[in-house]
Structures are given as structure tokens and as C-alpha cells.
Length: 151
Image (cartoon, rainbow, N blue to C red):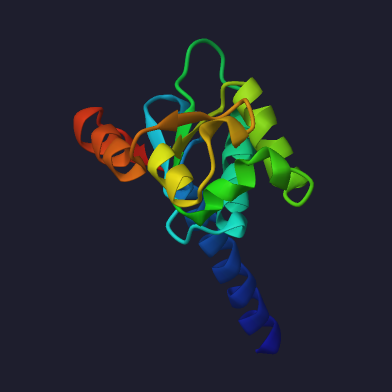
């Protein structure tokens, strides 16, 4: 009786694994549209998780041809990560972001308004990020006008 119960448990676990795989989005779908990464907590850890996840999709799929990078609009205190004088502190995140930008996997945009709040000129940013006048307006434009989907 115990052996039968063990077999049922194993079959149940295997079934749930198959079902979980069916729910996993196909990797190539990420590169068949326009996506915007949602960074809600404005933390370095959240940004790093998003970059790692995007990299995993890219490495798994290795898309060919033209595709749009995943856009990341930063408008909170996390923009400090991309200031040149903070490079040493956040080297692993900045290097990952630079690598993904170089491969056209991400497009990082920083809010100029936030830069002003922080008292920093745009020239203090690392060279691979671009800027937008107001981050929330850019997010709204991408989602509502350009039909970007959240990643």
C-alpha cells in the first residue's frame, strides 16, 4: 500500500511539472513584439532580477533577424546605479546592463527629471543609457500609444 501511495505521489509531481512547463511562455515570444520591463520597487535588486531574466530568455532563444529590445525606463532612486561615480559599487549590474545593451537585448532609458531631483547632470550617466524627459510619461506613451506589453 505504501509503494502504491509513493507511485501516486511521483506521478502527481510529474504531472504538475508537465503542466508547469505548458504554462511557461515560449522564449521566442519575447522577441516577437515590444516589451517594457516593469520595475516597481525602484531597487537595485529588482533591476538586477529583471536583467537576469531578460538575459536568460535571450540566451535560451538566440533570436535571429530583427527584434526590438526590452525597454527599461528608470525613474526612481535606482537611476543612481548608472552614474559613473557609482560604477564600482554596482559593477556587476552595470556590466550586465552594458552587455545586454551591446547585444540590443535591452534599451535602458533614464528620467531626466529624476536626474534633476538628484542634483546630477545627464553627463554623469554611463554612456550606454539614454534619457527621456519624464519617466512616467515615457512609460505611459510606450504602453498606451506604442502598445508595449509588460515583461
